[in-house]
Image (cartoon, rainbow, N blue to C red; front, side):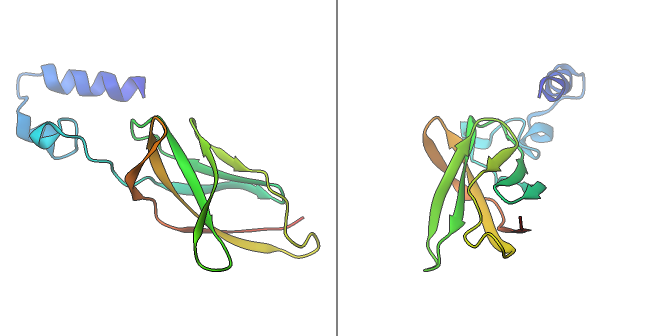
Length: 126
């Protein structure tokens, strides 16, 4: 994050800097507002009781993770301030592989921001 911040400072102080150049990648917000971007999730090491999800911080304070219930609703499974997130809940049936989906949304303090990540599917077993 420090290296990116340094690059942004170098771009903004360069002789060819314009507001338009920095609005496109979101270095400068249009109309003075910062809209949340969609988080990116990627599965990491996975085993029963230890599903690891890597995520991009995107400048927000953290991430809220959810899994679907059997009824199709999404429920919170935890929050994290730094990547990766680790879901330590045990398998529902210890002798069988389990497939689950996850998605996440950025946190600004304790408030979940608009725009959730893509849904990723993870299969894990004992």
